[in-house]
Amino acid sequence: MPRPGSAQRWAAVAGRWGCRLLALLLLVPGPGGASEITFELPDNAKQCFYEDIAQGTKCTLEFQVITGGHYDVDCRLEDPDGKVLYKEMKKQYDSFTFTASKNGTYKFCFSNEFSTFTHKTVYFDFQVGEDPPLFPSENRVSALTQMESACVSIHEALKSVIDYQTHFRLREAQGRSRAEDLNTRVAYCTGISTHLFAVTSS
Image (cartoon, rainbow, N blue to C red; front, top):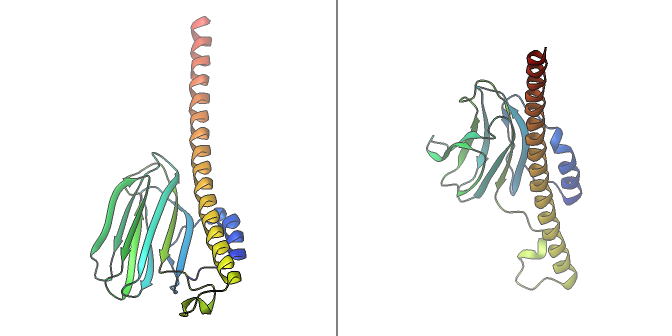
């Protein structure tokens, strides 16, 4: 999936939180691609995603459970031949980097099959390859001009800002979910205590 430009990515960060997918998605491949998705994973369910990757391409899969239960999920990554490259059980968050050993469609799945009552909200970021040069002249032998170097530095700094904002928003969403869950439990226990007090006092 092609990486959008800086302005588009700012808009994507603001709008991505409403993205909740309940069906399988096919991620469109592209050089220097990145796919960032937040989706709901129902209880006792499994969700798989696919990406066509060229041999020798460096990729990174990062995920985090935002809400639901113990904030954990099973994750599995397979190459085109079905060989397991990564497999973790009941992880709250993790990051895995690999280099594609062959051309083909790679599959990664998130499973909540161990849970029979709680659904999860999961975020993942799948980076494929490197970003294309900001300027066509970046690959030339001669050095960049001062203006070009400044633009490249600003571009890299803005990407870092976006990544930091994404992680901070994930933490905020997870913290809010925990607080709301705790508040619900406290209210429930308070109601029971009040009822028992009223019964024993009568």
